[in-house]
Length: 124
Image 1 (tube, rainbow, N blue to C red):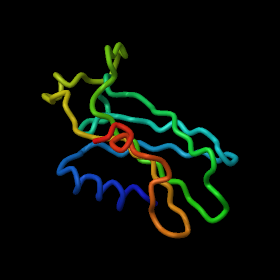
Image 2: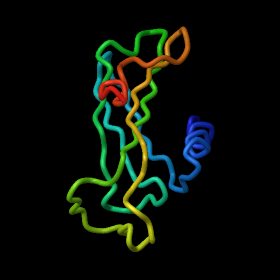
Image 3: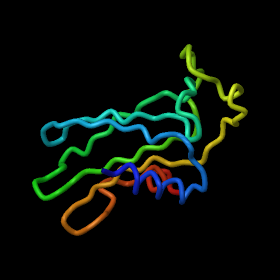
C-alpha cells in the first residue's frame, strides 16, 4: 500500500535507491515497540548493512491516528561481522550514504513530527 508511492518519493528525493524498501508490520497495543529493518540503499543483499532499529511512540497511535515510521541510516553496521550476502566491494559501491532517522506520526491534523528528529536533537 505504501511501497510504490513512498519508495518512489524517497528515491526521487535522494536521486538514487535501487534496492527494495524493507518493511515489517506489527499489531500491538498503545505504546508497542517496533523493529524497523534497515538494508543498503542500492543493494538489498549487502550483509554489512543488515540492521534494525527499535522505535516506539509511547502515547500513539490513538484511535484517530496512524503511526508511520521511516528509518534510514548513514552507513553500514560498525565492525559488521555478518557472513553471507554480498560486500560493497562485490557491488562496486561506497560506504557512504547521507540519511537521517525520522519518526513521524500521522494524526487527524495531517503529518507532524511526534518526536524531535535526530537533526533536531543534535541541533543541526
